[in-house]
Image 1 (cartoon, protein in one colour):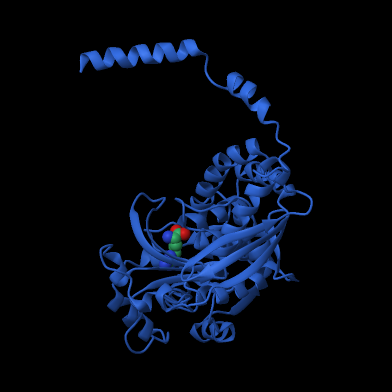
Image 2: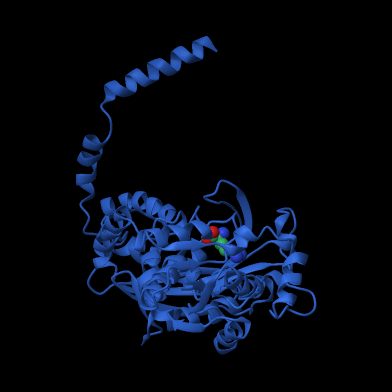
Length: 406
Ligand code: ARG
């Protein structure tokens, strides 16, 4: 009996060539593509292409809302930016893709799952870690990693097996996109001294080409997640798409980055994440208004660990769930509205309010006569808070000794 295999399909040359390659190995191939909001994808054409190349079944899953609500929302709540600036665009979609592939594999009695990652990147680890976590008995095929073909050999193989080869000059870039953003690497970008050319960008205009007038918008959050844009309530996926348009047109969300891959090499990637830039800046600003100081000061420790876990293929793990429970607990009070100003590549918070959770007290903060802060008490507080004078005597003593030795 031939075995069935579920292939994570994109419609590109690599995963198309994988179909006859897996058939040669004796598999019946079920191609699955997830709609996670990748811009400009023609899912009908992708579905047909898989069948034409030889798949016995071709499935498209619309997972946009699931992606936004269960994968992007945690990143927003956790201010998760890998190495300070990458909002985890590709890292996020991998566990979701695998969740669906494993489900389909079980429904269709498939014994194996195939992915199209190379052997150099993070995604192979993310795919395979998730497969192992969800079904340790599932076999894994990684045709692209195991091909060891040159580009020419791949194209020859494609032609022999009736796989359509893109005509004209193939794109020099490797692009991965979803509604949270777009990652672009390879080609001319491989030399980090090369500036990214105009054609490397797909979701944003250059900041200097952006409108000369700023755009203002109000983002309303409930429990750390944006729920309304300019007072209009909408699902998170829909809001992200809208914000990608608006912020992209203002040149916002470009990230040109050298990053540490989990496989141990540094790579250069240019990212675009316009909606993420706006939402995450607004969220952080609202936390400043609503989080209690100790919680706010401690939270980045958890955030940093969570962010690295997402990047490093540990989405499905007990520690991830435990840390996320901490984050969720902190978000109960992150309710309110932030006014964002978008202008030539920058998204900044310019005003904020929270009806029930603001910890800002104007009467305490003011420098006018409305001041209710007991400034007399501050003198006593400073005495309690600062170090005893004997400590300073010691420090001064050490300093003067050092000076003498100089
Ligand atoms: N370096 C990013 C990550 O590991 C993106 C990977 C996919 N990038 C690409 N251009 N195909 O999450």
